[in-house]
Image (cartoon, rainbow, N blue to C red; front, side):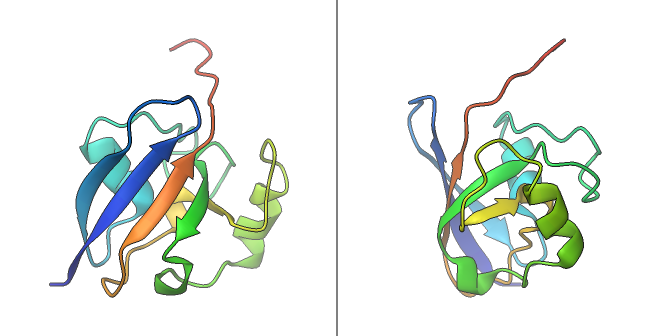
Length: 109
């Protein structure tokens, strides 16, 4: 099984975190497994835009964006050309990945 590193950067200024990820895991999975708060209101099934991240490096190692994911990204706060949903960023295991987690509003949490 291939292993790469995912570097998590935080728009709120928190220190970067680097965690290993195995082929087949999503960015959302790795975040949650390492106590990184990343919203996921739909449970990680590409049914909302709350796990929105910016992929700073490693985009070529992620699956191509689907029309459904693109539709949800359009609903995210401040979408950019490098926006993806963490639940859809499934590690292929060939290249390290760097993502920035935008500031989030955890209402009711």
